[in-house]
Length: 132
Image 1 (cartoon, rainbow, N blue to C red):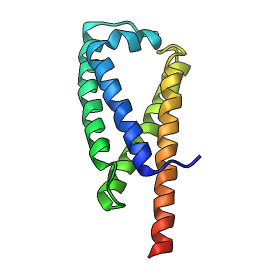
Image 2: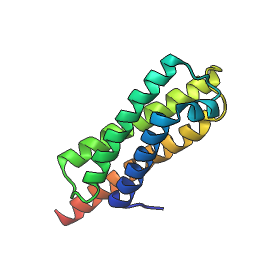
Image 3: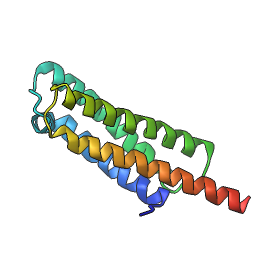
Image 4: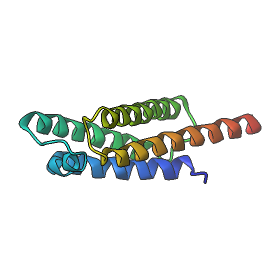
């Protein structure tokens, strides 16, 4: 299934805004899903992560209608690296027993988003080569 950059960017912005809300106001819920205890320290990191998710949400929302460009490619490529990196890290934390099996849902979403942006980038490159 091929998603357009606009659809993928819109979905990503909604997901990021949702994660910002949950990490900001209910971090203990996500931590419990991952079998990680809530503490003052994890709360600080969670709230800071919430702001980063909000920033990503704004960027993807504002970029959803942008034509192919260096800025769009830079954001997409950075997000691809982030998604695959988080997926690998989450899987490693699960293998090492630092997180419960609930983290595998995050790993799956991160991998799928990374792959989605890889595919959207490939289609953009192919289209620009046929038009140019």
